[in-house]
Image (cartoon, rainbow, N blue to C red; front, side, top):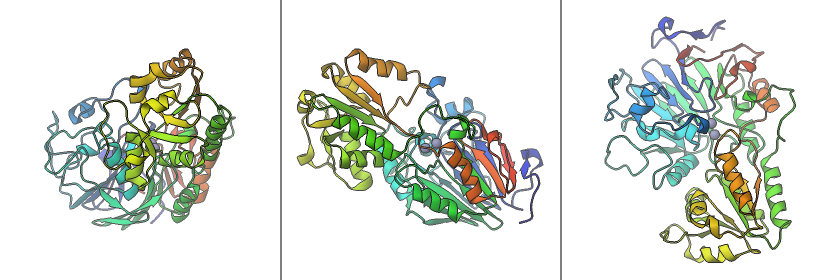
Length: 450
Ligand SMILES: [Zn+2]
Ligand SMILES: [Zn+2]
């Protein structure tokens, strides 16, 4: 395609539908998460991702579609949102599209929370690992937002079509390849999108310092020279390239080493931990390398089993039902864990904290490794850590970023060399510069013709 000095348009002056590829940036333009992007060609449209921006400091997010639209979290998308959920002031219409499909890159809520609000006639695609993870996380509801209308055959999660890693989906004239990338949600993907006149890469969320950094490299290598690179910008929201890092920029291997070191260095003390259950690789590695036996909640163990087929040791809280996907021979009695100081490192999630916190031994350790609350930006963080300290338990926050550290993130541009760079999923998109072409500083509703 011919070079285009200014690839951006206001919607009012955009090219008529059908003449060429259009990227519409609806949300996630200056926020961390909540990406909502359309790619249109002719009468075909794809939409990605489908979550809500996560900001624990801003109070509660509406849980239903009318509330989300009224509060401006999302614009109403006729032909995409569920036609059976009325939204005041908006009419559902099919927008005369031949093909519409939604794609989700990974199982974090800022990318996947709204999937049950998609119209039943619109197919939803994810990489197969992400499909299994989302379904397992939402097995009893409470992870994704609930559907706003009854649909036959839905359980808590609407139908999802799983795509193998590297697999392609054709949506009319648009082709989407889902490629694995390294992130702290298991099964995360980046997308390669080909229309008749443009090649577009969408990073989703990615990094290089996890257990699958090579996947991120392979994704970028496969997308060298694309017309448009839609790229996340979490790390650059907090630090300019070259500025000193405020916190150490550690890797998953560092996290594992530190966790194992803490378990080794504290014989004779009770040790509990908590993690975010979509971070399957972190707990898998902890299970493999911990000198004490790792025991998960039955919920986390069932997520692990659903996604990987692997059984882990687990416990149930008093009154909790058995889970038929778990091996009864690997259950550990909760009373045995509460009394233990030597043999176990067991998961104390929010529900377990509610139920057994007062029975924990003082003098123990709690390893907080990626679970909520995530950090100082969450008003719940300080009281959470203090509660352990007040009980005589030493809390350790051991974590690393799910996003490429800033110098590596900038290096992505050199690897891909896009004609147009579109930074999203960050608060400071203007810090990115594309020496190989133009850089779009997005605003909600902006249309880019790559
Ligand atoms: Zn994200
Ligand atoms: Zn993420």
